[in-house]
Length: 339
Image (tube, rainbow, N blue to C red):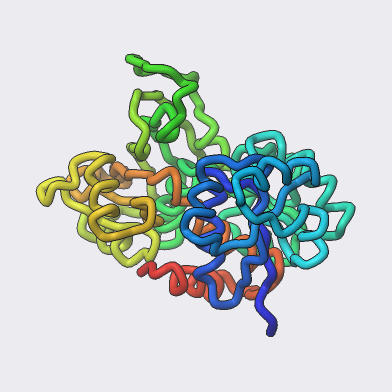
């Protein structure tokens, strides 16, 4: 079968990583990336030799790129003639407007978590509800926190069943470089339930969930504390064994130095990962505790890269590259070097 032809619209924090993720898939071909202005990300792309073809949304935007000597291959309209599916990483709300363009051209699309569920056919997670996305035209990914949370809960649910989860999310306030947030000294509390708990129930309606969210003045990673009520008892050793066997979950030990969000970021950098990205969530060994059917654990969410594997799963589902969930996620994992 010919490789799936993919475009990435919006070459920002997530779009850069989506482009790299597609380029790693042997059965997908990245035909181009689309943006509206010569951002720092675009300038860096140019400086490293333009490994991806660049397109603009509107012809008049090309002049700004020409002034910097950044080559533009054409417009979004021209790119849509060539692709099977678009990965839309536009700012929240823009994707909804873009969808009308994709619909008019008969092109499938996958949207990121900033868009509303109502604009898509399926609210999607590769491990938890892959089958619902097979053959559908428009899918939306869960947010970074929800993606990682569902990975862990789905892992437990498929092993012994999960009745309920209560989460406390310690959420970074902004992405690195988001200076518009200002200099902050605050831990801001949101009302219960947080949207991640609501989203989890949308993907996994058989699990009752609620949770608290606290914004803190950091920029790398979120920490989620989970209390899961299981349908059967599980020892700490059994839980750790399950997590360690999951290709998208990394078990780490505080005693080894993994005592913070930044320790994981630094570790990814020391491993030589591009942009210090890590696709896996991390379960902190020493936070795992049990009491009857209650299992408590804490996970780290690498917010900039965690959704990339599930987005690759979404391409597989929407284009029916694989109809079997385990076959699909296994291919994504293999091409991304997970597991």
